[in-house]
Image 1 (cartoon, rainbow, N blue to C red):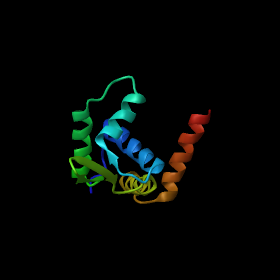
Image 2 (tube, helix red, strand yellow):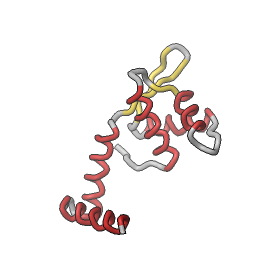
Image 3 (cartoon, rainbow, N blue to C red):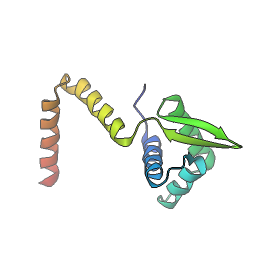
Length: 115
């Protein structure tokens, strides 16, 4: 499973998680596009949002199914599951899977941010 994704993919994932949290219904491209356009200065075309969501399907980050003429999407992993996997990947890539070293690095960054 490929967990790397770009800025728009990240915006779309965050939007879908938020929409899933608000409702038990699955999410359509139109739902995501409407939310993105309401919370951004730049308009996102329906086709752009659909293309990116389909890429997230290919990366196994979303699942897609059709109901009638409309496609709906669901996230494969919750936000916390995705964060957990990203943290493990970060620890493996840069800290030889040493979570204590990763936490120390995060703590230093937090101290810099608070200074």
